[in-house]
Length: 113
Image (cartoon, rainbow, N blue to C red):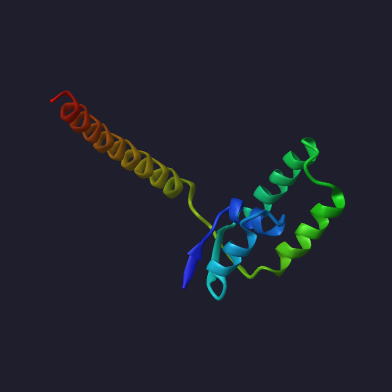
């Protein structure tokens, strides 16, 4: 099975965050697909962690060791495709919000009766 994962998932695993074991369990045996920008995103995340003093060099190096052991399939995602997906997702969220508003109105009407 193919699973597309993002930087936050990889960071959770390699920095030993609380959801690490669950994430490994869910993805074990799957083809993990990541954007080709992942190494830069990981580097950027470590930069932010260093600035906030949330990680030491020793822990960052250990995390990179774990990162190199994860079998990842890197794919290029054209920026135009990514932007279209974002716009579609936002439209869906807005439509879901409208549905929620309808539910709120129905609840309010029921309370008023």
